[in-house]
Amino acid sequence: MKIYKIENISELGHGTAVTVGMFDGVHLGHQHILALLRQEASRLGLTPVVVTFDLHPRQVLGGGVGGVDINQFYRVTTNEERYALLEKYGIHHVLELHFTPAIAALSACQFFEQILLQKLQAKALVLGYDNMFGSKQHNDFDRLPSLAQSLGVSVAVDTAVRLHDTDVSSTQVRKALKQGNVELAADFLGYNYRLWGLVVKGRQMGRRLGFPTANVCLDDTTKVMPADGVYAVRVQLENSQESRMGMANFGGQPTFGLDKPVFEVNIFNFDGDLYSTTLSVEFVSRLRDVKKFDSIPQLVSQLNADRDAARLQLSAKA
Image (cartoon, rainbow, N blue to C red; front, side):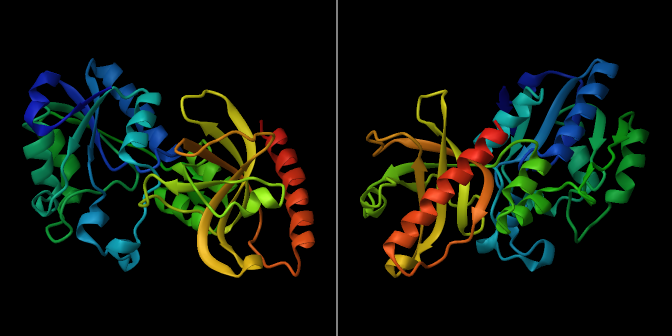
């Protein structure tokens, strides 16, 4: 994949089919748009290009849908994950714009003329069913299709992808994850949600209980965290293609009187040294809430039940 900046966009050459968006998560709806983009590009003999931003607009401007505060906004995918997924779904050229208040101040038609037309020589524009870009204060998005067509640029508008009686969107993915419904999130995404992190030294309480855990310090704290709970997970070790079964705990350790949230992963049938190793943790299903037990034997009994349940879930969804 080639990621362009405004400074080197001329290297792309002439004649592009473009779509614009954050593509956070590259979920099923995004995948549908990308397929339409590739189809239009092939039909017209153009190069398919995704125009996106280095920062999510809500990270820069704050507010956003529902008045979400800038410090409370979390992404489904990092930029690295987004670009890997875009490439997986057939996109090999991405224009990454640095999102600034100046960019945000451009109306949709100004953005089209100054970026898509002048910089990218766009010949085709693909819009999502709910796609909207440009300044809300100077909203002329409704004029965009007619302006594009008057300038010789074809316009294709995608349809919504519906699943579980809702239109698939990044907002719905975030909502499912925050509710701990990682299976619903996976349905919307078309793949299981992942978190990455470095294994750091913990209190080693799990080892004393017969369930050694890797304490994971997340690489990117701007990603959505699933709701507190115990999950069946698949774990991939750094520099390894092998995926291992396991279970993870998000949240406090109330049995030990600890409220500070931790991210612990127990990898089944593994007892090696993982300190300073990066783990990829893939969430398959939610097993239960975090809860306080009256005794250590009760906790150990529950952990054994969790491990059995996780094995069943992971084997069923292999």
